[in-house]
Length: 462
Image (tube, rainbow, N blue to C red; front, side):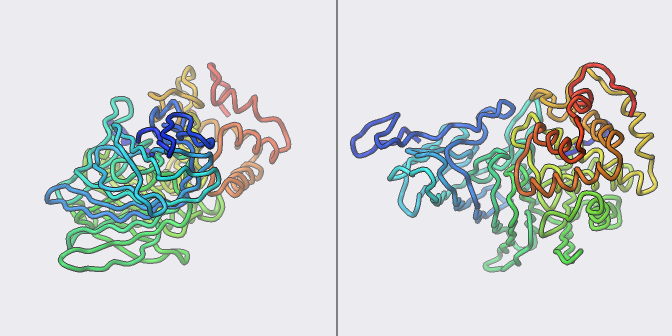
């Protein structure tokens, strides 16, 4: 994620036949009500892992109403009497578990589901939720509102660290990644963009259904829905689909369109350094809504707010979000306190691209950022309010450069490529990265990285 700086840049406790509550007989218990991540209290759930989401949604910009059916395929990781899904501001009509009606209740942003029978640990099960309503963003005074935004001609569902729960029931934490099939039905003439490979569209009765499929595991905050009047360009790059879209309100020959048109070129530059592009499709979406004051690395198809292009073409932000396809999307954080693993590397990739594209050198950028860094703010575990602060982005990128200077280019890029290959489609922590870097370099690196990531005094310009 990169923010515009312009300013500058299931339910009640399960009742078994005996009627017992709480600790159910047979060892079945309720799943945890959140993922236990203090950066996003209440988000995510415990007791199961989702493997796949099949989403079939219909949206009408005329009344802002969304209706949908979500079918989740999951595996119980403990013996469950009930479980929860994150779902904010929408009404639930029906829930079925393995085809049988399940009791359910909505408790604020939690959908609590009690299946007809307990789910043993290791059991694969399906959950079908039929729901609808008028979606709204999730208010967040610290981090900014995220989620579903109605627009004049459609909608934009987007946000970090939370957004998915505003338009479908979900285990809304990056530790539970899943594959997706997404069908979006909208009035004829509107585009409906999402993640992954385009699977075609069909029209009937004045409405068009657009289909998308993301076959690589995706963290829920990386899912997106963009509906409206867009100029959609479809092609291929390196044998994969490349789909870009630019809001019709933006000039066809303007800086936003010119920037997203270089998506394939930027991705190839990054692949030469990080290893093969990790997904089955490329793309990007340029929106015209000023409420979107950031760009987000929505998997395979980043979404860019308009503020980045007010001064002309900006491929540095494209490089940042495309770098996230490796750092953040393919290899995702296990907990939000390690968000620098996403943002520090994406910011450094932005510096690498700028130098390659004729902009300022990495050395000059490092010197400038070093001079303005507040060393009292840590990069690792920066606190909830600091998730998107300079300590994560700029100081994080300085730490990446310090590692490069310490081990040399050959070893540095070997570390990055190996790290990304080993943890592809998974989750990781800072400790995982430091350990991998030390093993690959064949030397201790913890003290060096600690100084750059959490030390309270300047370590010395690398």
